[in-house]
Image 1 (cartoon, protein in one colour):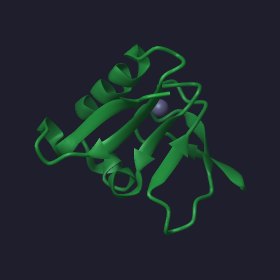
Image 2 (cartoon, protein in one colour):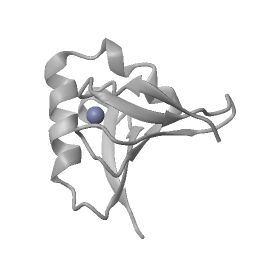
Image 3 (cartoon, protein in one colour):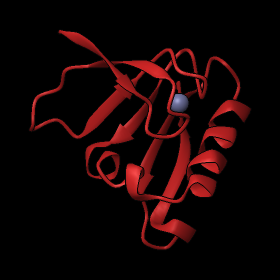
Image 4 (cartoon, protein in one colour):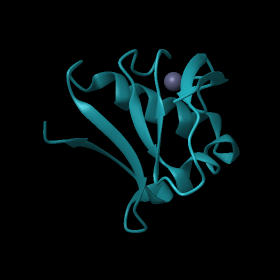
Length: 92
Ligand SMILES: [Zn+2]
């Protein structure tokens, strides 16, 4: 899978984002300040992140950093949550 450099939509640092085909549900972001080991973003959420306020993006980045390094964390939509987003750690 090809990997390209992109800006993390949360911390705005350069990150590695594997090229991902339109049918895939999750996008991986690696190497940015949020989580050097990477995290997952639901495809439908990714495109909405640049439109969020800096405060919301900063808060998500801070919360990503707070998870243990080995955790696999993903950001997905959840209409019941504030901002319509939820972060969750997947069982390993
Ligand atoms: Zn980031």
